[in-house]
Amino acid sequence: MLLRSFALLSVALAWSTTALAETIKIGVTPGPHAQILEAVKPIAAKKGLDIQLVEFSDYVIPNEALNAGEIQANSFQNQPYLDNQKADRGYKIESVGLTVNFPIGVYSRKHKSWAEVPSGGTISIPNDPTNGGRVLLLLQDKGVIKLKDGVGYKPKLTDITDNPKKLKFVEIDAAQAPRALDDVDAAAINTNYATQAGLDPVKDSILREDPKGPYVNLIAVRTADKDKPWVKTLLESYYSPEVKEFVLTKFKGAVLPSW
Figure (tube, helix red, strand yellow):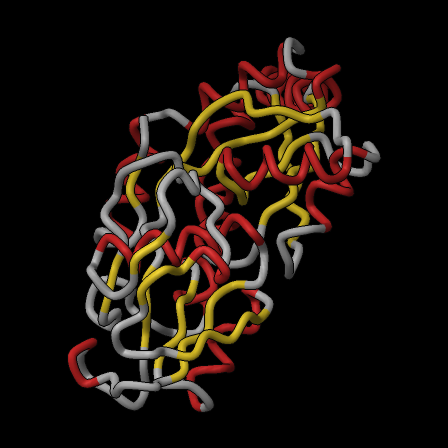
């Protein structure tokens, strides 16, 4: 009888915990962002927060969905990208915490090193202002091109002032970059799409961004929600030692914790 009462009490407590758990939907892109949030989920669950992940295949819809209230948070972008989206679309969303850094890389199936890329070679870069500009800054940092002074974090192809190898640049959707590898001499690919395509950002990139600057990724929520208790619980769960260890072990330097 005592065992039966204990069992009933356990079931009641489990039901009570489930009933009291707050559920939020977080938008992510496939790959590391989704994998990291999967590691966050059990930690958040212990704190009474039930996380449901919604995967998006591009960089536009996650902010549309967040602004519309279809999800409560997203984790996929950096501050310059968010700022650009807000300026262009008037979204009332903002960062509540930094997450990880994905140094962007340049990859090639035709050449084993950047030195092998021929004059007049074709390079694909993302077609959105933030990531495209990020690649141009990377190429300038590596001495490949020169840009106008004062271009900030979103230079355009028209801002190139010196292109010694007369490289041809093709702008494509960031998610399609891995598919372009067979058609170009080299492609700049965001880390989440690179790993999703089976590329190793540390071993396979022929140029790689230094892990510095404003390109740390973040968690965004609607401005109206930024002070809600679940936001604090989400960040505490994300910033746990277990999640940091997961990032370091799983991605082996391709993704870097920023807390």
